[in-house]
Length: 180
Image (cartoon, rainbow, N blue to C red):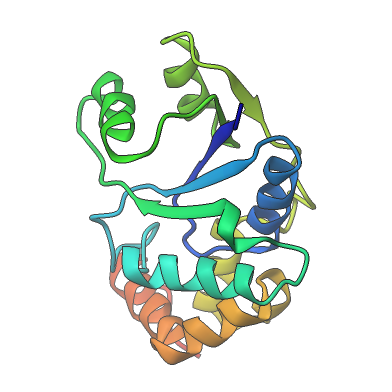
């Protein structure tokens, strides 16, 4: 019987740590649905990229890796619901039936565990630097960030003017932060 897993994240942006989790999850399931959470959010400090931009980043990064069988992957944007316990039900309505949820966010894992759904916390890859928060911080401050993301993700960010967007959002939301 085919097993299906969900990998849930915001992917703001998709970085090499996320990529490592995709490979980890594919080693455990036959089909992986990558759930792009907070799909309705963009142009905010924690959520600068649109759902479409994030789907593009993920798809291009996976397509570029010869070890990944893209036929085993679905990418599904899912908007937030303001009632946390209802959010997992919303996910259920928007994705295929699944056997296990992979995530790195303890709260996400808790919400699914409370419903009796099997969860697995993916091992973190170089967590001290592999976080979307760190990628965005580096973008906003003009530091090197490209080595934290797969090359196709960096290309997508460049195409959509992502660095400029992150810097503009940081200026607006962080008093005292100035563009260099």
